[in-house]
Image (cartoon, rainbow, N blue to C red; front, side):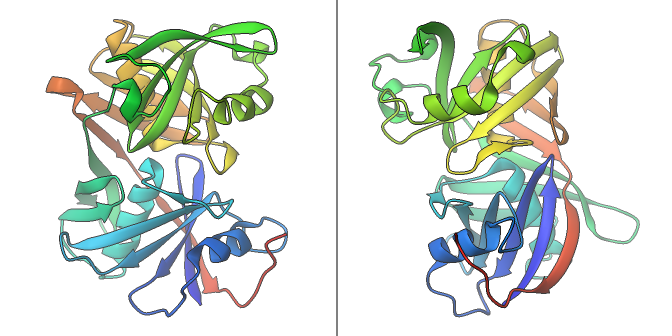
Length: 281
């Protein structure tokens, strides 16, 4: 199978043209491809398919083989892939995902390649039962979760996928991998959750550290960046336009009325090749 590899704000992805290939088991393919020792290595894979309701359909699978509803950094990589390869050659593109149709606006560089990509991420879901989290409130904001005898203040919402946001003063005091994994699998979250540890620098800048559901520690998360800005704004700690610094890069998150979210950033093509085989474990 021919593949292309992309990176966006620290997340790396393998892209496949599902319109041409005949692969059936994308869950198993993700396990094999994403393995960093026996495969190519990535946080997840994306596959383009024909859509009856949008310009194209995006399928997303995490590195553990589970299917995800959406991926913020992933959809920018996906957009660059389909635009630069003339699969969909439009400056405004509609993409069908399991989290609904997302609308993309593309700015190109001097060579005509997709450069800055702006994604209309829609509005977040706050209601506890829909996030989902087993707290029956209209907004799950600054609740307490106890892990290993320590209390942490968290907020939960869905931006395409479920997220927990924890504001921290000193990231060095947090074991991101250990705490992230425990919160991801905590009984409060019936569909598990992504976990974002956020340091607010000022009204327009944050640093974010991510543990992703189904992928583990990653260098960035687009939907997590959006969720974190929404929470910071709700708590009157952030403005409507925020520069988000992930461990792997930066992007811009803007909020409009009713917390409608726009995410802008780039994606980079890393490599092309042919995946012949690979072992999942």
